[in-house]
Image 1 (cartoon, helix red, strand yellow):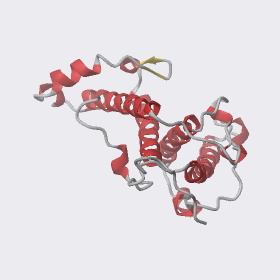
Image 2: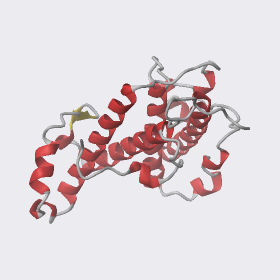
Image 3: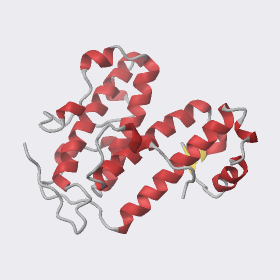
Image 4: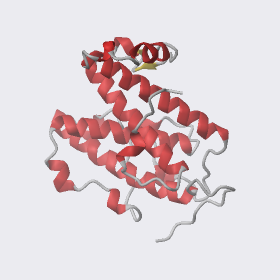
Length: 219
């Protein structure tokens, strides 16, 4: 099924129809991972903190759907990290469609056919925000896990920049997060950044890990 493209001045972004179609695939992956995570934790899937419902049959971008057989081979930790990444994708797309309800119970299948996307400078602001937070998370991970980093020539400058980004993750300063929380948050923000870049840059390919990369500086 061919989806219309966005008729913008620079032709850079994808249409609402394209983004909605991808959002349905993301939702299907999120639900599948949620069910797998709940099963491995020994809880009913409807008791999971992510209450997103199944979107129904996914007609487009089926190549992005997680294979059931492959998912069954994932170690528990990999299921969790993929869940965090795709949760980040879902939350970003939920924001992109200007949804007021919390993303925990969102459903892209319920979007109106004429739904529109956020546009203009707000997208650049969101990109810069997500990029800076992901940069900070990765800086903090490297600071903790790489003993040589503190002696690197660029560490002092990176540390100065990091102190300019005041943000809380899981309701606490990043410096107080555990290593596991840092990893989970980094997966979420990497998913957000990749989804936003795909939606706003038609040259991007979904699933390309380069869309999760940050630059040497946060801004």
